[in-house]
Amino acid sequence: MSGAVQIVGLTQLNAQLALLEADLQRATRVATAHAAHLAEAAIKQLLTTSSHAKGTPTPSAPGEPPSLVSGTLRRSMKVVGPVPAGFGRWLAEVGPTAVYGRIQELGGTAGRGAELPARPYVMPAYERLVAGGAIARTYHVAWRAALSH
Image (tube, rainbow, N blue to C red):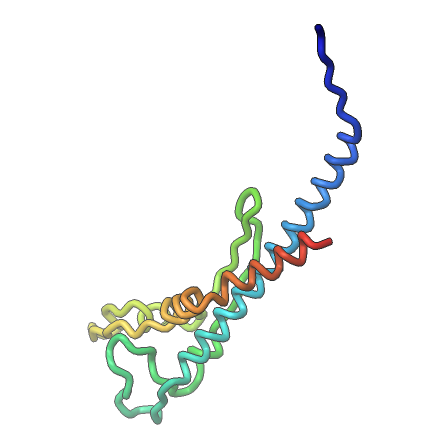
């Protein structure tokens, strides 16, 4: 006894799968952009938790976000991307462009040898978004919409 398998519609199946892949790629890119802007907003919000007048000591404790003085650090937050990062992946970066943004986040030795404590504001904002599920929801909503066509 010999058997044979005949597959009908394989061309159409492949075409539909290619369309689905394109829809999911678009959804992932859009979700990545949305997640990056959520992070930007969360970071800016953290940078408004305390403030002080220029020339006065900072009221924020080490380990807390830097206090708002002029708003330069907050205004310098930028989103770059999303850009393709390998098969099915997208990358967006969120962070400050102000020259002192990194030392505020990580701490370290400043220009005249002064040691500045870390006053993180980027990672805590991101961690809150992840812990609250906002990042995951962004992707789930986008993918669900792409799959429901």
